[in-house]
Image (cartoon, rainbow over the protein chains, first blue to last red):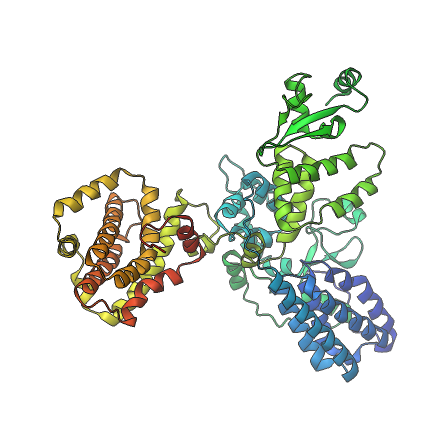
Amino acid sequence: MKTRIDDQSKPQTMIQEKYTKRYQNLKVAEALSNNHLYPFACNELSSIIDLGYSQLPKDLKAFIFRDCLSAFRLLPDMNTSAAVSAANLLVKSVESAFPKQKKNLAIVEFKQAKVALKRRTKSHDEHIDLPSLPQDILVHIFSFLDVYSLLSSSQVSRSWNQATSEGSLWRSLFDLHFSHKVSIHIHPGFDWREAFKNEYILYKSSKMLRSGRGYCSYCDSVVWHDNLRCPKKQCRLKSGKKPLDLMLTHQVVNYLLGTTSSSDESDSEDEAVRGLWAYPTLQ
Amino acid sequence: MSEADMAIIKPEMMMKSYIWLETTDGSIQQVEQEIAMYCPMICHEVLQKGLGAGSSKNCAISLPQRVNPAMLSLILDYCRFHQVPGRSNKERKVHDEKFIRMDTKRLCELASAADSLQLKPLVDLSSRALARIIEGKTPEEIREIFHLPDDLTEEEKLEPLKNLMDDPRIRLLNRLYAKKRKELKEREKLKGKEVEERVDERSVDDLLSFINGKDHKVVKTSKSKKKNKKRKEHKNKVSHNLHSKQQGVQIVDETASSLGGVSNLLSMEEDIFSLKTDSEDGYVDDGMDPVLKEMLDREVEDFARRLNSSWVLSSGQERQPVHFSINGNGATRRLTGTHDKPFCQG
């Protein structure tokens, strides 16, 4: 389904440098400072480490180590439970694979981050009442959100729930995800949210979408997609309405290391999809 | 805002012309005209109402409700920067990114205020910032950040559909009842027979008259009185009623005066009765009435028992009303917090 660069035929020593370069192109570190992408970047790091940290070329090890440290240092800025669980996962990988010195350094960093996080959550105890936002502003805010965040928002409170039922939101999401595949007959009173949901379930996009990654054939690279498009402007112009091929974490790692390991996640797509609409979780 | 209009206005006033703006709290301030005119809403006001508008303290332009003085000064700062034509796009972007760094509460206020002043670029900026905050968070986290109440029922959370019921308080109440129902079912299994006998209305009547030593009719007239009140009040009363029963019970305990306790109970029962009439009118969900009656009957029965027996409450009984109010979600607490509790004297 996706074109993958498979290097299994080449001798290992020759492709050492290639790994490092590929890793740099993946721009994992950049995603760490993004609130939304932080968990995915951490998962990629964990997977890479789990797959065989010891066999990596020396400079790649150094990069990975550096990025792990950044991940822990940035953890207090990420105010989500998804970030915390991703960091926990990363620390487990670190504990099992890293050599002693590096491991200790990383763990110290992690512990400091946890302390800072605790301090932050404590200071958040003001019981002030925020002004209630009018509906059209809520809708405007939601127009900038991705599917998951929108569904999360719909479960927050009554007024937010009402705002998320606005058809235009789902229409633009539908356009974004499916317009190149599906043509729709619109009639007055058409429920865009239902349409979106049906297509979503049909195309089983949930897991792919959650990784934040896509493969752009125009620049031949794995990127963090910006609303399902390549962040590079030229690629966006060339691709038009067509979204990227989405990728899962293990596929990204395979791409990097030239391996063909299968995912650990259960392939119960139905469960995942139902889960999305009941209560979206990021992992 | 056309160039021609600006040209007309300027020569007639001093070099730096000012507009007077009034916020809803009554404070009036003077603002440079070119800055204020950057806001479309102010611009329209000036143009529509003629050149006199905003030209002096007396005819200051009154700003929409959502613009408080703090927000006004923020917005004016924004306008002050952007209305200067000579700035590059990059400069503006850098300024915006710094400008937008504030806590969530102020961001919300800013978005509201900018929207009412129709200042679209600022609305976009603040909305994007808020969207970035929301992105990737779970509902609970979002609620925490925005201090929003968790007032959706479980069913609503499972399926993102449009709500069928319009009155939010009914929904709230339904949720409370659903919880109470669960508790009742559990207790049913433990207690067994007692519940089944108390299904019909008559037993409540009997108990009431027995407790209060008054006529049926008195109770019924108060019932008809309540019928005329709005439903909303009823719902509110009952939900906090059940909560305040805990207080009522304690008062009954402490004062140890039968009259006080009885009158408390009477008014409580009236409310329950009025809820019953509502439920008979069919406003509450189907399949609820027998359960609701059951619940109410048991509460009434408990009170009857308490009044007749000694004033000392066993810990097991005491837990009943307490259980409910503690288990009530944040919404319950909010509801009871906002209404006066006629029963508890502190």
